[in-house]
Image 1 (cartoon, rainbow, N blue to C red):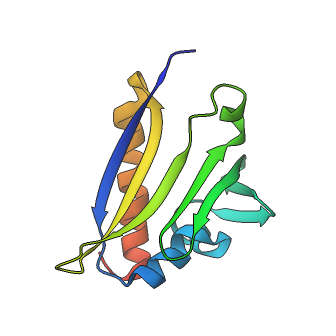
Image 2 (spheres, rainbow, N blue to C red; image 1 turned 120 degrees about the vertical axis):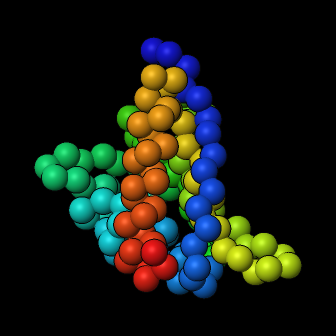
Length: 130
């Protein structure tokens, strides 16, 4: 299996950090834009898309700041793979950005970034920030 490459994306979003956090950290919020349905039991989140299902373990959750998860499928491969959704607020302008850190194989990097761009576009639409 080839080594995955870490990448970071930044998406400016015109919404309060508090509201954005609800959409990136709760099953109901994630169901609005990330997956068709999301359930959580303890530290395990189940993401459902058109018949397929993936589970992720919650690694870190910091109120109004970030959520970090690891796909259970990646746990066997490498403990260093994860994806993180973090809220960044500019100290001076108070502009809010959603920072995404993820990993992808080299030949899937562009596709993975485009997938995030599409999902964040949906998030902005749901938030009325598009």
